[in-house]
Length: 575
Image (cartoon, rainbow, N blue to C red):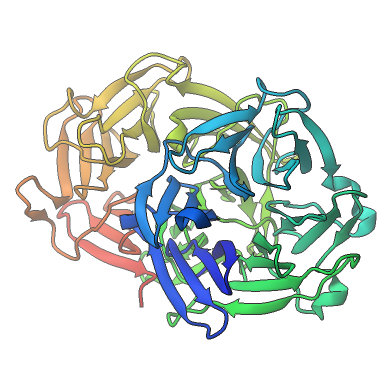
């Protein structure tokens, strides 16, 4: 297990989620025995972040950032709970609560149904913008707004909101308030993690006195790397904290009246494989110097791969470079200058990196009323403008990056309620098609075998879309799960199909489809070499002779000869 996220403590056992491999384990703190409970795609785990426990039903509910709520009973995964995908969940006495960016809900743990108690239409008070965590006591809820760096107090009965504390106002107390992320609560204190600042903040619920719980005085020159999620044990008065970058679990004894606490590492996670390495490569692009830049979703981080030798170099990650913690690096492109631009899709933020791997964030424009929530694919338009697909939210935005002031502005240009044409589903990869002055966008319905999996053309001015290739247009083998597209002059698109799996060539005039490399309808493979498991994203070398495809399931980067369809693995994170 690597990248610990959500955790809980019950009866001398620590329960921990690990993001890198999508797993859920228990750790007996008496004998250090580790037990696997659930995980992997069979149990719907992709990016597990948070969990709660209902002892009466022996039920765990895991919040997965990519999937939603996963129901686990008697240590067996039961499938998804409800139809929503909240940002965070918490349990206070016998009532569970959940949040999304701008609302607080009551959560029915039997059905997954959510009842709004506080948002723009429920309760009065300041509005939420970007909630990442919720905690509380019997009488009050507290929600952390990542974007505003404020904690709001919510009346659970009527939804009324009030500002509890502005974390930016305590610099004189040593509080940096760089990336406040998670909350936990005792009956006396509220705790806040800040991964970028490497701090845990304690706030007295009555006096609102603020202190840095893990101060430099208590850390003995061994600071935490990225404190992430927390669990407070009310019986033993101990705060358990996952350190995302250090791959450890720490415990801090909480003593009434003391402003600081000494932390102890109780779990250290390691791997027998060379580390760091690619784990789940998804996005990729060709850099201006001819190397492949890879965005690894679950490691997470950026790697540079030499397409000839396969030499792989880590560019930035929680272990490398300063700046905000990244947890899900996906969307990827570059400015005209060659500077790399990428997103952390979990936090919905954008960064450039320097030669040392330091991450430089762009601040969201506060005047934007609608912002992307699931940034998946970036396509360069002109200068500092990019198009962005908004993944599961089925929208396309135009982004403008003000590099002088470090601000990004977003404009919604197409969605199911903006523009006309075929219905959007999950929007993944896309590419600009100059002859048509349109975006070619991969739209699919996930695991459904009946809903469309099509390649659409989108007018960036009107937002209107038409079918370019798929069911109803174009001859050739049908798409099963269209994932990405890359334009090659004068009239071709190279398109990946994850579930077939295959790399297609699509004629932009007719929509006709030809498999270049991969599995045909008869089960035979076109091209020699190792087989794809899941063909994810695609780019094409400047000479037009080879395409490069990520395979997240195989943890590999493939090179495909576009004449013969032959495949070879250029680089892999596997030993």
